[in-house]
Length: 245
Image 1 (tube, rainbow, N blue to C red):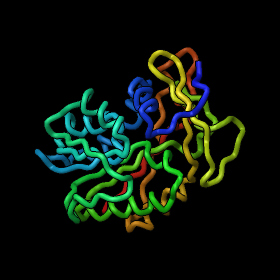
Image 2 (cartoon, rainbow, N blue to C red):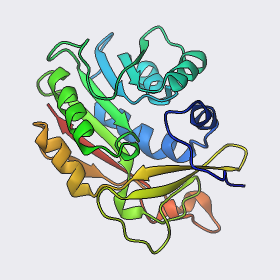
Image 3 (cartoon, rainbow, N blue to C red):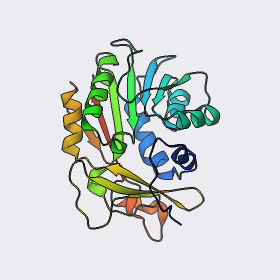
Image 4 (tube, rainbow, N blue to C red):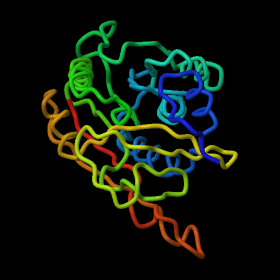
């Protein structure tokens, strides 16, 4: 079953549905890539920033696996309420922000930053450019910034837990894209995202003063899911961009 109307990402209904999303692909493809990108950098209490933390899944991994002290920020109060209830942690501070500024953080004060599945939900390039510049401002020299998002080359592909866009449809930068996310009960949550090419992502990063990112397109091993391998063994649902301040 699919919801009739797409949910806005900052609504209480979306937060409730997102709490029950099927996270198997993110857990196997995004989370390990983020942790690998930060490997060897964590130390006791080092400050990290999780931008657009949602219900806190990535923040919890950073705090548990790496020992980071995490500032986890989101513009949805409902998402943050769920994060505080489901993933409390002594090294995570959940904070509401406006999606634009990090003005409570000093220049060069953060040792690492991550942002997962956020840029695709925002239609405003100017707002994202400002946010990216803010992330660059608060990072220490040489600190990593890992941006994980939907793979723009995979629109229309039916993966086991999501489909972003209609099959056989070409999208241009800025186009609205229908998105389906599978929930744990097997139903589908309908939402919208906004298409950006890989070049547009690169320009947002370099325009903020970051070097051009490395790009990782993780897929699952085909042998994991015999007899019929799903799309994520052939095509990457997500892309992982890594750069440094």
